[in-house]
Image 1 (tube, rainbow, N blue to C red):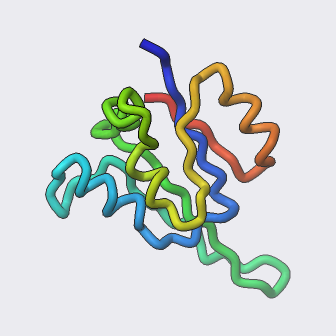
Image 2 (cartoon, helix red, strand yellow):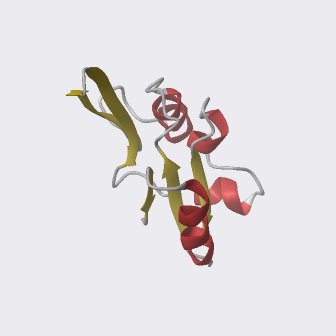
Length: 110
């Protein structure tokens, strides 16, 4: 089995929570369980501007939708991400994706 990583370019995450809902539906999780949870950092005031970041973070319930990947489909969170900032890639490609997306990118391994 190939190992995968979740690459999140949180520069574009708007905090819409579509990934959370998609995961809850896909995994049939209750409303107080998450496979992925959008966290918020901020607001922070820098040079007179109010700024904040949203970062989708997978939980221990996340299996990267390996069954969907095996069926040739994207993971549910990736499919429903309105900002297209979540991507599940083979581990070998994770560093390449980091270089492409810049400094507001994180990689999660299951």
